[in-house]
Image (cartoon, rainbow, N blue to C red; front, side, top):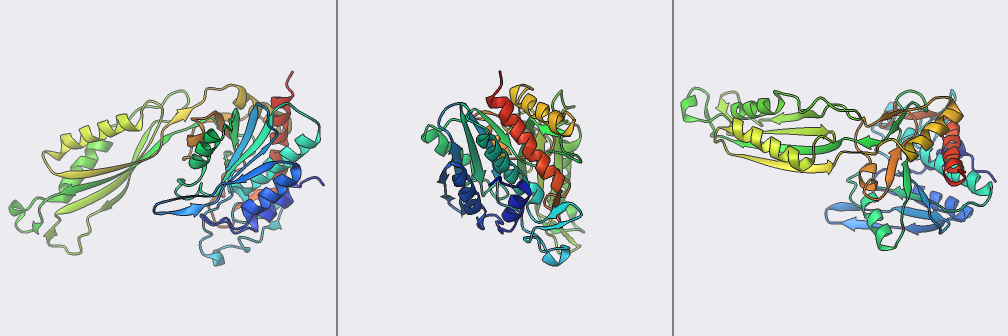
Length: 383
């Protein structure tokens, strides 16, 4: 029987796979792929202070090249269920929309992956392999998921030649946008030390809040850059300032701020760390401070080429438009895959992901499956 991508989307939504729970989603996908002839490997990983996570790698064929579909079955929490118009794990269809957690991000794309692969495989023999790299840890810490799966692939001589990540990449209409890269992301916690005192006797104190404000001003006074051909300007955003002072007449002796930098390929996390410390040192005027830095990923971009052409040509064939090649948005697991092969992101509409009443158009799921199948056709049967 032909796998219907909409029905399979509904079946996946009905699996409550909120990170880090597998929720039955990987079990369902594995049974489905094994029924098509895929060889499946379940890859559970664990680490200190992070939840255990189950993952799935599946491959049809043994020859090169290996075309990989990558994505995740885990979803974010629903929030208050009473805010939803339907049960978030019921997969109700209304007004040509399927509603449920994961409909857009990204169970609809996984269903389109599987449906496209089945129809392509059933259409005749081909030289090469199709694989699925599906994690349960994309919405979580991203420690026990794709990154460790890629290490497992290397250890087991499994090579990916090209990879499509099914993240919801389109702003409003299917075929609008392909992500050919992503900005890097780094998070900082800045703690400034002063001397606590009475507000009426400021000469006996050293106001940590004043010091912090001056240091933050040094970081935000000028833009990091103006962007370039493929990237928006890098952005430093202060996300929290916390003095923790419960009274009005005490000069604080400690103040903390948190900030994030989304940076383009004009920088690296190392170069930005040097820049940050230089700015802070210049504004600190000898004040003691502590800076913690956590890097989520480096910026990257793949120049337009084979993979972006495959996606663009398939979009034009199915929906009549060629997508913009973009690097906007947050981070995804493509930041790990980029070190192994060419990767791009193309999936459903991003408007409702992570929201109450997350939903996607029935027609978009069917068209996305057609786009993925057209890509396989062009990749394996090109003249």
